[in-house]
Image (cartoon, rainbow, N blue to C red; front, side, top):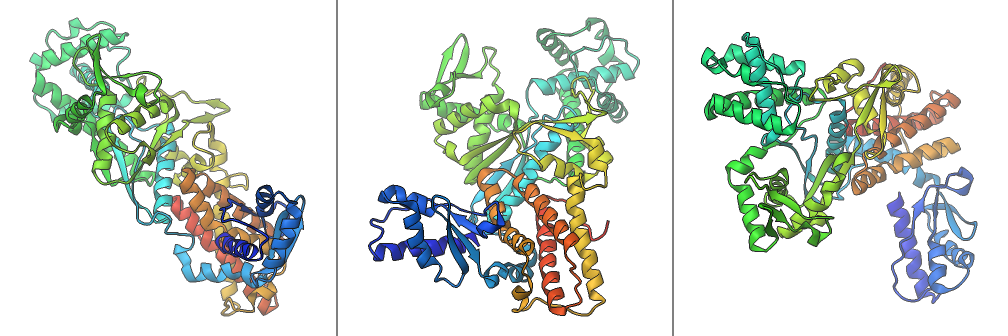
Length: 578
């Protein structure tokens, strides 16, 4: 509807120019909004205020001239002036309730658009290190990335979802050492397990499975090592332990432990995400960047462009040239490439794979990482403008009024699977998506499982189920249909408000995509459910008057369809009964 209003207003500007009231061909960025008070009309625009500035005249005078032209359009029932010069519109009944026919005709595709024009976009999200199960903090990023992918697809983009597997580097070495030491303990070897190793129960479970499946673990691999291990509580001590285990096992045996542990955890992550209704089109291994020489090639390219220099034995990238606060190390003084070096190759490679736009969903603690990645893209000859980074604050799980501590290394954490088992997929996803991604959120377990109007997902789903029940009752009264006479029988302010909300559904999807703010959709669904519940409680949908009944059934069935469409984009069920 806003598109139609925009076209009408643009046409009025053409007429004002023909009449000599308006000069020049300036483009005005006017807004069309829904007034907070129903008596102010169905829509409002600030056009006259913008025109007055450029014309040096009274906004109300301009508004009156524009209104005289606009009220001739059959789209409007009336056009009025308010305040300093706002133009308010009340739409003709046929225009405002035309959305009912559109919803019925388009069904599941209602609200979708061609905004993206089949532009290729890659969305990378979750990408947690495969060093332990996903916890409830990771769940929020999973829900947000998944919802963004659905929203972009609904707006005409070709979407590719990717998980970047950080299966290279020091953390994976700590994982391998932790599993191996548990393997030794399972076989009766006495040793002090390092306090900064991964200590969760899942490590012992992987170790037991590995021992059962790997006959290579003979006594020769155990002898002498236990006595070398004392409590490891510093990074330096852990690095020494890693080197000791590598030397003790040899390259092939060490890699066997490492790859087994990584695969076991990664399979668990994949399974947890499947349960959470999150899937990926590809799982990209960081190790492949090293093995295929992609990182080396990227660094050579940067070196040829004089973006690298050596200082104190390390190789640095000149990220300050592109606005970063300081230059960044890409090769340490010990010759090891940093995570940042891998990220440069990975992000540049995304464009090389043909993606035209990138969206990364990162934890809020990675805020400072954005400038250096964008600087690297520019240095690699890519467009940093085409990279959007969505920052996500980790959710805090509340139990009995207190937050539950989470630490992957210590093993004291609540997994995403635990959360889903307790509150269900629908509640978990909706709660994660209710607020802006960069806002702190507390996940209230008690509220998530309650069957009350205070539970937002229950409230929305109940609206859908309630309408389905109405439709079942209506079927016993005979067939019904939306007709051209329908708008004449929808006369209340509540009915107009619902119609306006339905017409705005597509705009919500577009706004969510343009701003990378998926929370706009659950907020919209909650408001639409609220308007329906209030309407149903005050109006008899199954009226004895057939014409009224048909019109009201058509209106609430359109609400049902839009609720189902929106919940579907969030991968949340729309139950027919509750």
